[in-house]
Length: 543
Ligand SMILES: CC(=O)SCCNC(=O)CCNC(=O)[C@H](O)C(C)(C)COP(=O)(O)OP(=O)(O)OC[C@H]1O[C@@H](n2cnc3c(N)ncnc32)[C@H](O)[C@@H]1OP(=O)(O)O
Ligand SMILES: CC(=O)C(=O)O
Image (cartoon, rainbow, N blue to C red):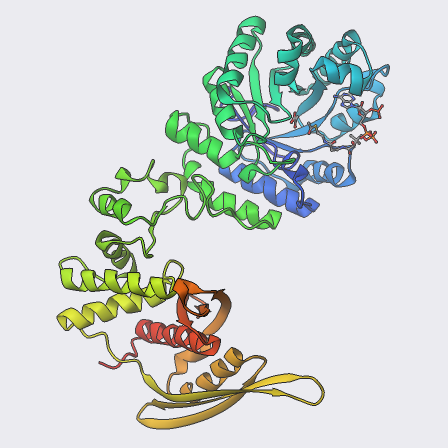
């Protein structure tokens, strides 16, 4: 840990953006960070510019103890954030200085300690099995001991809102004990996540008036209100907000750091990140999802890839005039991008905007636009889907432009005469597919045969064999993903198959679609578009 500010002081101490991804986030079912993961998460959060990083509970589990040891040994150099160790107050009837859990917090060498304490009388009496006097003494003793050892201490008042509603005096006594012990912030926790914003804000205001203590907020997401509750608490006077990356956390999760930060920055105008930090929100969110090994939520507010994706034609028509008419902020503010999706819901404006994105100029070409809209709607009704197949859509748009105003699209560098695929179930049980293609390329008729582990693989191999001597760039192209969806009884017809093929040449990726009753033909259509699209990029379409 190397920082220039005094221990325990983040850049700008009047508001705390406090991250608990490595502690509460790790309590999410399915997450298991290694120590190396934890160090990587902390580095990313620090790059983003959060004020505090709660690294875990030293002494409770070996990985967390090792994380703090390695951080202290120099493996974690924090530019913005202060590292926090989390743990509970001393046990009943034990001196704080002699409680091994408390000693582990000191040993972690973290400059800040967040202590969890029960503030609901029912928990104090039934779970801790002590009276309120002893519960308060556990808090005050532990806080004052750690403060005496030079630590900055925050107190997480567990179950505060439920406890305050049931027995406000006890809940407030616990906070006062923390204040007397020297805690800098008392954090009101909605541990069961059952609060709603108006009531929660009212309580925060009341507690601020009654205690005069600096308040923080920690919200679980069991009512899907954790972000709203956190923002309401800040508006009611909390100056310390605890969140986790992408809302990871116990049960339904916690307040999402990225949505909370987006709201604080974009809606409340609060500079809670260093300059340029907000524009890193999307990148950091996705990088942290990668480390957690959880697919990013495409619909996540602010940072999801669909957060600024517009499908409805009416939206696109207004966006064409001014993107802010249908976006609540400029997506660039949080490092995200706006996208227009083209589907059966598209109108002319959607296609014109999408064309702009794909480099196909449809402005001033009303006939091409009208035809393209009709074609997209007709094809989507047959089961095609262009939403995720930009490369096929680009070819469709280019063909329409070529068809209506004579702008040459160019012909693909090959034409198919025929293909044949057979499956061979061999005596040893192995199933081999064999494909033969007959194509015309470079002025020649070429026949090629190849085997594969399935019909599409064999077809792809045979096609490559036929085309490679003429189209050397094909060598770099590989089929990186293949998705099949059977659309049963689509529009009252028999089942049709939709195939999406993602291709890559090491530099770019593009996706194409094919639809047919027959899976091999659907695959062929997507495969053909993939190669034609690459031909377009490689400049090998013949005029
Ligand atoms: C709301 C939250 O999410 S807080 C964070 C919770 N996180 C975790 O629990 C993850 C890490 N936890 C652990 O590794 C273990 O539970 C440990 C090491 C902390 C404790 O393990 P054990 O000693 O085996 O106790 P166990 O987990 O069974 O029970 C917790 C004990 O702490 C006591 N306790 C609970 N909260 C507090 C508190 N705020 N202050 C003091 N003691 C507490 C309980 O009364 C219970 O005591 P008991 O053993 O005398 O009955
Ligand atoms: C401290 C904590 O994680 C909670 O009360 O939910």
